[in-house]
Length: 64
Image (tube, rainbow, N blue to C red; front, side, top):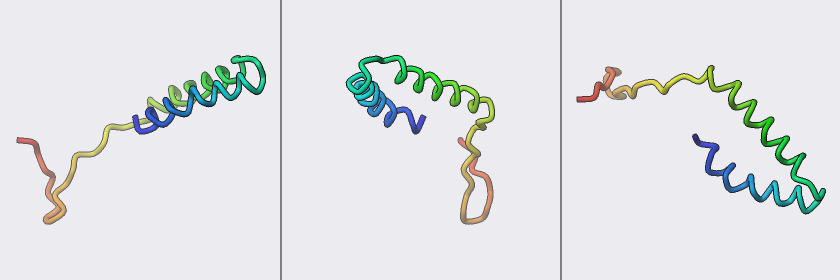
């Protein structure tokens, strides 16, 4: 989720630059597809964040 906004800004600029440089979208979309494939492969290994802890006495904070 942290990478989504920057990639949403940079992606179209990159694709436009590749088209202007090569005259084709194919290489740009291939790179973007490869990036998506890497992220999809990594996602099963992601874990939810740990609960916050009270830093004063080390107890876990439970929502009320």
